[in-house]
Image (cartoon, rainbow, N blue to C red):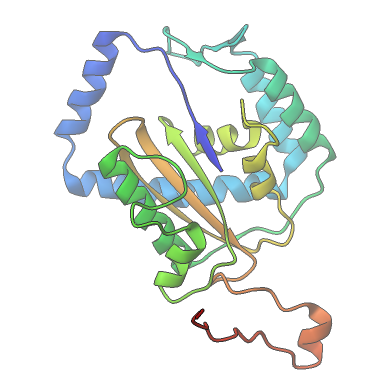
Length: 239
């Protein structure tokens, strides 16, 4: 699933943003991306562990709306949303009813696959879940030695970890609220985050989720208790 922040920006503000990005060294950008990846996972876990507390955060956020336009402190231009406070109110109602969930552990294979996609799309200005070479999220994990049983959320825009996770939870304009469902899927236990600069949208964060650290299928408890394992059938060639 994909979430995009859409904004109205004055020419001067846009030029300032581009100048600041050019001045930053590659090392600084890498450090900032690494920090954002860590903070995004921590923010996801905060929402999973304390959904009702996170609902209070969204209530404060709701006050910054004027119709469908969001005016965060210090932003005189505003951000145009699809649904305005309606999507925020729906997210608050969801969080009030959501039971707390265990935190997601960081998984290196998932993070590598997420970073691959963030790097590729950041450089090309692309979007979507399929790589230029045709690989799906699961296939990108498998390329690193894992398996295909993963879910993926992508955010494009500008902001900190709070903005990333808030956007995924509110899921403004997304039918079915698929990003929110990923964040609160109860059988996910691991995630990997990859972030970076994006030539069209400013920034990108890719989050890959799975029930296992390597994207392999989860063995049911009853089967594990009996020594059950998962075996993949070898690929066959159609004639």
